[in-house]
Structures are given as C-alpha cells and as structure tokens.
Image 1 (tube, rainbow, N blue to C red):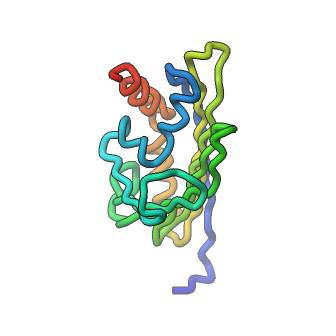
Image 2: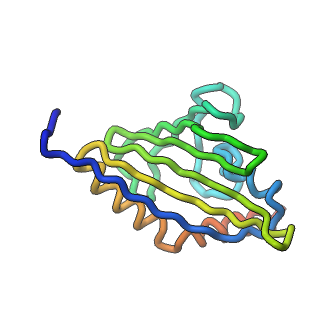
Image 3: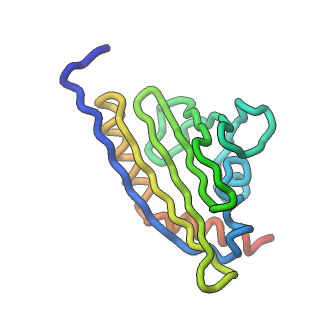
Length: 160
C-alpha cells in the first residue's frame, strides 16, 4: 500500500542508571543471550550464526512480548555495532510496522564496583500504525526511566 500522505515519525528517548558491579561484569549482560539471566520472559532465538554469540552481524528473533510490542509477531534483531573494548552495543530491530535502534553504552564510575549504563531507543514508524506503536512502546519502556532494568540487573548480580 502506497500512502502518499503518510509521514514517518521518529521518536527517541534515553535514560541512564547505575548497576552495582564492574563494567566488565555488566556490559556482557546487555548481550542478547546473556540478557536471559536478568530479564524475565526474554528468549532470543538465533538466526545467524546458529551459536549464541554476540558480534556485529549477529541476527536473532524474539516473539513480541509486552512493552508495547504485543500483536506484532516476530521481531528481527541485528547487532549493528559491537565494540566490547568501548562497552558499546547497538541493535537494529524491525517489524512490519516500524524499525528502531537500541544503543547501550556502559562506563566505569568513580567507584570501580559500579557501572553507569546509558540506553537510547530511537523508533521510526513505517506506517501509521507504526507511528502509534512507537509512542506506546516508548511510554511503556520508560515509565520507570529504566530503573526497573537496574533493579533486575542488580537483583541478578546480588544472587550470583
């Protein structure tokens, strides 16, 4: 369907939080397969490579699950940037309605036993429904300004 009146909208939001562990312990937890350890309901399925490794080009799918994604079917994720030496990872995600990036940067704090994680979501609608879903997803994802992520990660790290 070609809608000459459609205007794609891009919306972004960022938040930072502190995780109670050294950056070398925290950064890997933002890898798709390690995230299972702290994010309830997260279950990525590898596409390429078949092994569960994170590198630029790693591709996997995730069934839509909450966070404003319900009803979109499979989401295809692609690691578009992976710089472990700089503690940066970026994912490119798409569905039939929209496309977005998730960029995570981790850095040491003054206390080596803590890490500052900064996360940015940038959504672009591919159709009117995508524009609407983007606003809903951002509002849901950032309702606690990602402090829920910090709580889940710290809970996992405390239980090891």
